[in-house]
Length: 94
Image (cartoon, rainbow, N blue to C red; front, side, top):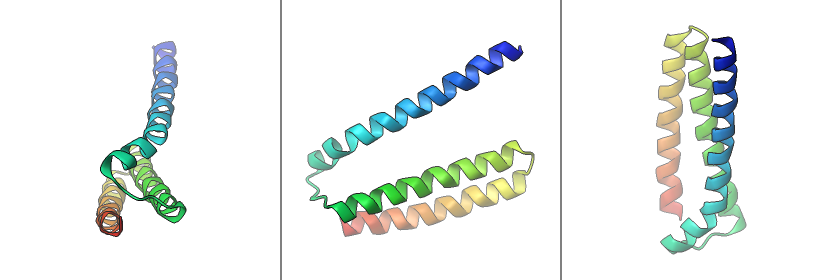
């Protein structure tokens, strides 16, 4: 069972890295298809927003995995509220 778990952990992180790489590669195409005029500062704000989203989910999930569910759910909820609010603002800016 330990070997099985070790392989699954590696597979998970490989798939996560692949997902991030595909999203980064597809972002300019997606922006062009939507007709967005993206400048360097808009890309910087987008990367910051996505980093905040990733960090919020990772921190909340880590807390839940460390048997701190109350703090984890609070972190997830707070991060999602903040990320949604900033995302709406970012979309209005674009």
